[in-house]
Amino acid sequence: MTEGLRERKKRQTRRRIADTAVRLFVERGFDQVTIAEVAAAADVSVNTLYNYFPAKEDLVLPPEEASPTRLADIVRERPPGRSAAHAVLDRLRAEVRGRERIVGLTEGFGRVLEMMRAAPTLTARLEDLAGQMTDALAETLAEETGAAPGDPLPRAVAWQLGCCHSLVYAEIGRRTAAGEPPAAIASAVLDLLDTVESLLGERLLTYAVRKDR
Image (cartoon, rainbow, N blue to C red; front, side, top):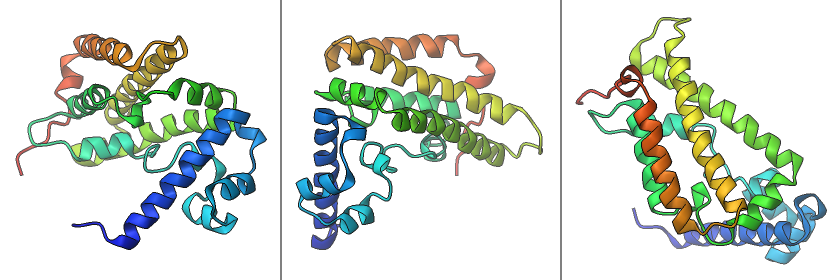
């Protein structure tokens, strides 16, 4: 469906607000910038800003990019013949190869990362988000496989895939903080994903294979 003028303007406004906020946060620190200052710099009212971003943390970690259902959504969207583990590995590889914003492989992300690490509310939100992703994935796996109530397998699989996901972000963060360029980081993380896959057991790699529809 073609994007209408109203939707395009809303998307552009949302992007302008977020970009303005991140710029100010990087320059002065997350806790040192107020919502009113972000709104003024982005040329919108405070009420308009809150319509797009209900919480200050959303300006840095917008729900569409930092969703608690991210892993569950990846698994639900996998094609027939792919397991849950391969779905997650496939998506991570694609995002790293594309040096996508969602994995932090863009120029200038190093300063954004430093800002996030210096803000306790942002680091706490990231930690909470990882747990929510695992919980949502476990529920999806249990539902898809018809696991009995109390069966630990869906949660165990979700935990291992959540760890793989977190490891990728931790590696990107570590290398970004060390000043490595995105291209070098992407190459190293792809090697890491190959290593991770080689260490995963057959039972996990073949768990929850999507049947033909």
